[in-house]
Length: 101
Image 1 (cartoon, helix red, strand yellow):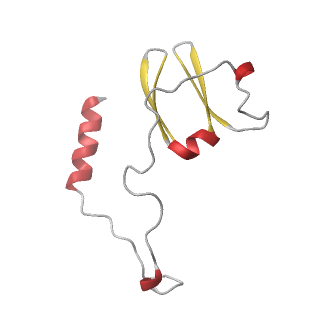
Image 2 (cartoon, rainbow, N blue to C red; image 1 turned 90 degrees about the horizontal axis):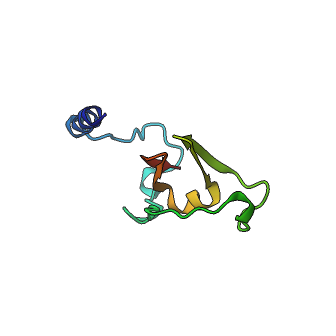
């Protein structure tokens, strides 16, 4: 796994920069503005805390969650929270996990 990730990162570094194709734009290019938070402007959750489902009073019955189970453990990551953080570093069933939204 480590070798595969290393090769992937080497590939990314060796690849030419990705350029946007603006040849088929519908608005003037000079009116396109950068938006969103700055780099590292959305903090990852590094040590998430969990509660049993019955105690999750901050969730409505129809709230969506991203679920993950591994090694006899299960997690539910509320989409409402992931929309603010986008990344969660966690351990599930003794295995490090990165949840991305």
